[in-house]
Length: 151
Image (cartoon, rainbow, N blue to C red; front, side, top):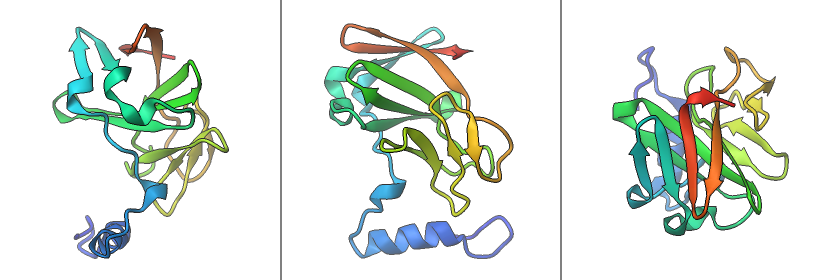
């Protein structure tokens, strides 16, 4: 892949090389939520937990991406009945962040490795601010995320 400056994008080259060798870089990937588990009601995003196997256990996470709504979220299950939803794009260069359950943080997958708390506050790294955290609530088997309100 060609970087913006015309050179080779090192991160993408490494990821593509690993994939070509049949190795999925687990440290850097967050599985997407299945499309059938996602619906929008006005300014709310509704996730059906019954259809998202990756969110069934503590420490798991999934990505929700919708280009038309300019939405790129990570939803993580931090405890049995506790979830967080944050913007997934690092404020430094837009690389994806992934959930790190042991440290209870989000970490940028770029070589910068910026790290954020679960409320989106920058802990360290060269970035341009905090991640946006979204207000959410559990409603039976659904997670309702208010896309207009920040936590």
